[in-house]
Image (cartoon, rainbow, N blue to C red; front, side, top):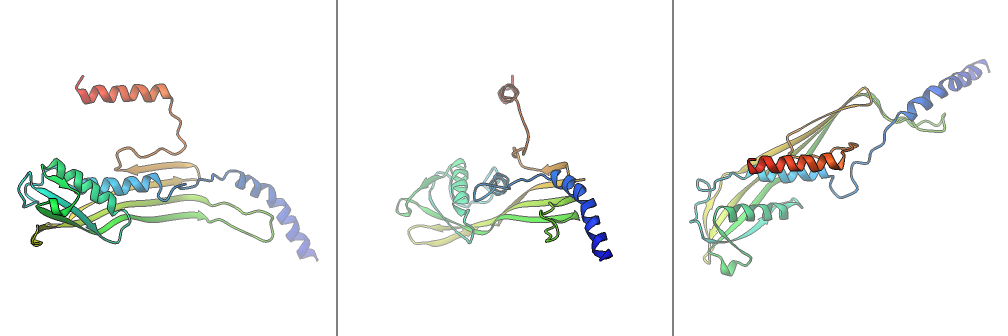
Length: 224
């Protein structure tokens, strides 16, 4: 009886503290789409960085040749890779054809890997659900880190048409990107990334400031 009374008093004394901790929690939904914006940037920028500026030492077909492109791989994002490679070949001076019967060469893009990796480190109290109290406690992180890496690896097999003779297999195209998030003492957040323009969660930027920033960037780009 006495033990039960002490237990109930302890629960009553700790209730305000638990309520305070619960009121300090912050909830955030990672995404409302199939892939979060940061995950999309990690993949797309990894693809762009894997392609060099000059293809002269990589692609052994003459400039101006008509080429058709196809892709194969297990990634659902390979259509993005196909269109990006098509634009890159177009910049190198090749004429991209939709149908093979109008092309001199077929470029088959073989996707080895195209996606993201996610890792976590955590020190603190994980979320708690108890039958003794009528609410759940959120995660309380003294230190929490989330590591996201975008990775792209593929190569190209080039066939001469219409015979379909294999002319060349290129070396692998390889690149990766990263976005790391660190939370210290529940509230302090630090991000580190090599992405060009990652979204800023919870930030407020004045429209006039954004307009002035774009203006300055335009001046810089034009050499004013």
